[in-house]
Image (tube, rainbow, N blue to C red; front, side):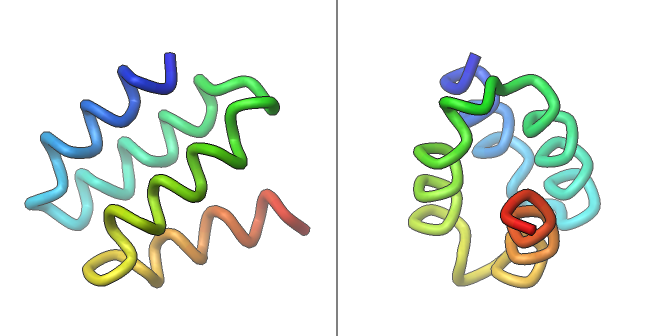
Length: 63
């Protein structure tokens, strides 16, 4: 499922609102064991353009 979510995020990364919506949906699809690897991938791939959005969702998960 993680590869599917990654593919979707790459395809919608041109639009901030769509990216945030799909990130939120993707996080609900993943199992807890996948979340850390997914988080690392997201920060490697999108932190320069969507760092605040990533922080918003991944900080919620950590806390």
